[in-house]
Image (cartoon, rainbow over all chains, first blue to last red; front, side, top):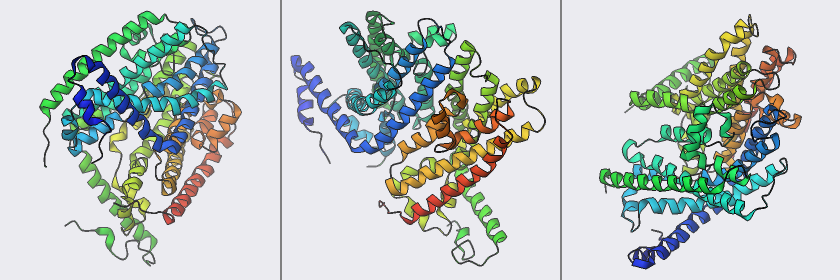
Length: 285
Length: 288
């Protein structure tokens, strides 16, 4: 069986008191690096997918150009809204698109391999989170950014001047990536109970798309739905990172809310993982 | 052991002299047997099936909800009202639904290539495409048809009462659904056939199917002319829905818009079948 590089040392360092943080960073670096490197195998296939993503971006940009009144609506002029779409088609590669974790967990549960994965000397949630985060960073770098570059030929994408805005947007995006992966993890781990997650995956995809503001600012929704969407974790996947980048939202309260959601989802995910461990029953040998 | 009904020499093996009608009848019987076996497998958990179909129908309506939210806020787009676009969405969705129902295995053809499962189709005494399609009916994809039917139910009464559609239009709308389904089949088959050369086709399917499917749920008038051209030629899903519907719904075009999909869609299917045959001849197993 292929061993993870440094896997022994990762486990060993976890019990080291003040070196816990160092061990966590090291674990993240190794696992995220693996997740990143694994994707390099599929560069040709990803090129096709990037082209598809550009087409999706074009669709939404042209639709918005056709429907937006000359005076715009609210703070959104036609130019701002197309920039909003361009940013989201780029950043969604970190927060929403291309995650394979759900299928990985389901396949492990079905094949019984999950017993080995749970026996690893590290937390199952953190293992999956780290690996997937690396994989999503690859997607952002090699799939999202090319999409953004291609779409920016059509859209006059403005670069913020303020360093605070850049920091706020990057932090918001990083939190959005974490929230997106945690939500996917919850759907994946539900396979311990259901063995079939296609329906839940549909539900998550629809909620992410519709309440996340991927293809439209949430202000377009009817007022009650808009308010609901803005306080949901889904808004941190697309709507808030784009708003901060476009200097339409103050970073501090958005980041605080995002961190709160990240903490809540972490607690829920780890509790559900404990329940899943207790429930697991592997047949065969 | 289950009888292999198609294994007899007259069952369509190369060089057979059985009359065409007899072979077709036999093919229909084999198809029925295989499909009912597939259905029995999928319907073991009926409540789960009904629940998941219902949830997928509601939750998978995000694209029409997006259109609805936008039109509710901004009014008609390029002269297309929410009811016009609802009907366009319905035709596209039902075409997609028919394709998903009958050709579900094409959608997951990558697995056959990656795992080497296509080998098992080659040893059957029937054309591989026939065996493939009969292996799995996408009964769990009924949500697409349900969404299309719901959109028709919501939009048709208004379009009829305002005189936008009437008389023979219902027939042309049904024909548009069939053309749309044929185009989905042609594009899906061509994308699957590409798997004989490149093996991994999931991303190609997203490019060739999902992107145009999303694009053609809106009136193509919103796109620049080059992109409109792409969606009726290279990625032609707009040919089955938008082209006939712009005439049916009085948004322009000529009566020829009703006729040329009738020629182009079967031609697209034939071209895709030819590609499949060519690809099949180039197939190299990845092993099992």
